[in-house]
Image (tube, rainbow, N blue to C red; front, top):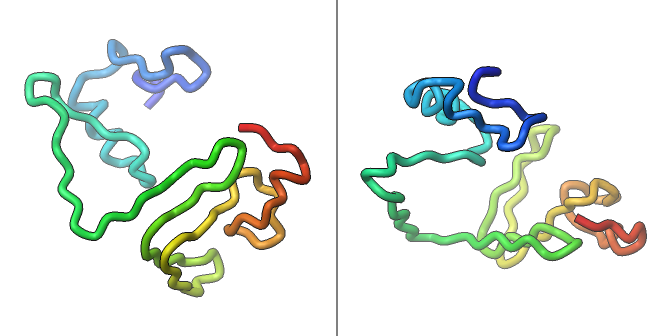
Length: 110
């Protein structure tokens, strides 16, 4: 939706370029869930968590997922992990999607 989202501009969300309903519809289509919205007059929604999973972004390092996770790999295989799972952010791991510490060897910075 080029009227409302212009990734090369700052700010890259151009709220005056689309209606509220158009922006909401586009955000709701985003597959990763990276975007969310709420109406100012209603306030931010509260999120209730029963089985919580904590995600920690390590400075200049891995994404650490604390809790039980199920990973579906690109080949379709499924792997279950518990406690802590470290995922690669630098793209250099020899064990993707998991972190193998390669970010330290290449001195990767976020």
